[in-house]
Length: 102
Image (tube, rainbow, N blue to C red):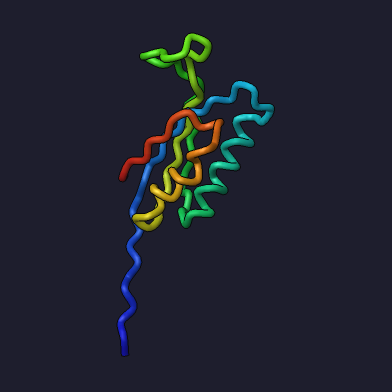
């Protein structure tokens, strides 16, 4: 009888800065799409939080001095953060992504 390896799940917090210039979708629509993307890479989203629009401390583009901050709390296997980053690599609505172990 072979023993199945136990799959470990880790807890994460993903903070995203959204750039919705030129996008007709609302923040809620983009948030729902991002939540579906997380689920597609094997994450179980436990909580989402909209932190609203905040001004950047260091402005790199005068035409874009602020961004919309969203946080997702989720659990999943250790490969989930890298898979999520890869899925969002070409997404123009996500300006920055930070995934931390929680």
